[in-house]
Image (cartoon, rainbow, N blue to C red; front, side):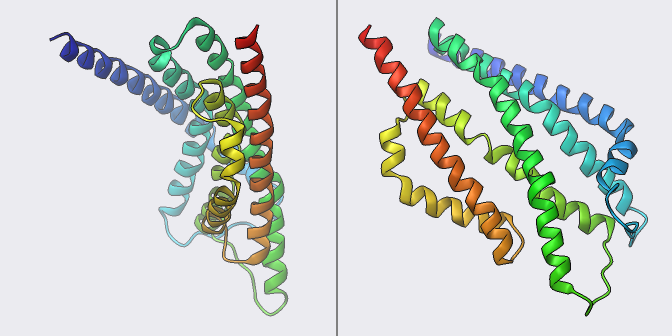
Length: 238
């Protein structure tokens, strides 16, 4: 009976956290949609020509895409906090304090990842593809194709750049350690290379531009895992 009550309590708590996250997303989406034209103007300010529309519904779809991406960025730390609150009862006081400190780092790395995708990778890939077309083709960008392409190159990096913080978190909880990460380096490299090929346009330059930072992030993750693991061992000894 107590076991059934515990399951019900856990499910009620999980539902509560999901509802809070969804409400935060909806509110952020509405606010973002109010200012979506300003966001759109900022994103296209460096374009020489206006983007083309192929259908009356294209601009609405793009506005919703922009507002949705902005809402995800705003909701991310709230969602991370809700996850922490859900697992909080299972953590010790020390673990609660240590893991709570990861939430600002998660949000910061998410923003850094999106910024890397938008300010570094996206312009390089666009420039490369335009150069590939050269003077042989007349280049026109549709608003739907342009922003879909941008989204595919920026949003995944927001999550991929979470790798060091997630590794620190899992190391702190004792789920993984730097030695396991080092042993799994070859398989991890292969997985990251496959992932980079899947999320980038089908050209070699784009793949390389994505693979290099991902492999660098994995090495950074191993380093921070060693630091956390070493500190954890020293704390146990003392």
